[in-house]
Image 1 (cartoon, rainbow, N blue to C red):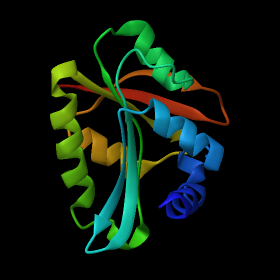
Image 2: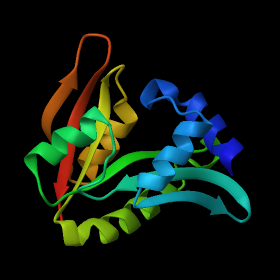
Image 3: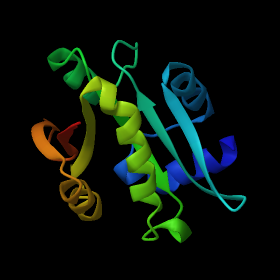
Length: 148
């Protein structure tokens, strides 16, 4: 699934951090979960999460780590275009929130510049609240979390 994950990440890189094969393997080694989503045998996307206390070098992850001892971090979830708006995202979030519950909060970021309105609306509807911002005029993210 490496090629599929890299292709999908690249197609959506405006909303994500770049990832080559070496970075994919690095993240996979650090991640609590690095799951490929499969729908009836078809590649439908992927999700990467981290628990607290990892050596993950993301500035966004570190922002949460500096403020919380207990948190679970959703680094990225990417759905293939043909599987969007069919409930798969909600299904995956239900599972991630279940896994994150012992950590008391699920933390993540959503782009404000460039603006990702669909993601902002999805997260707000699920009860995520903005708790900070990181970035500049060219790339700004809303740091969000949900108490579990």
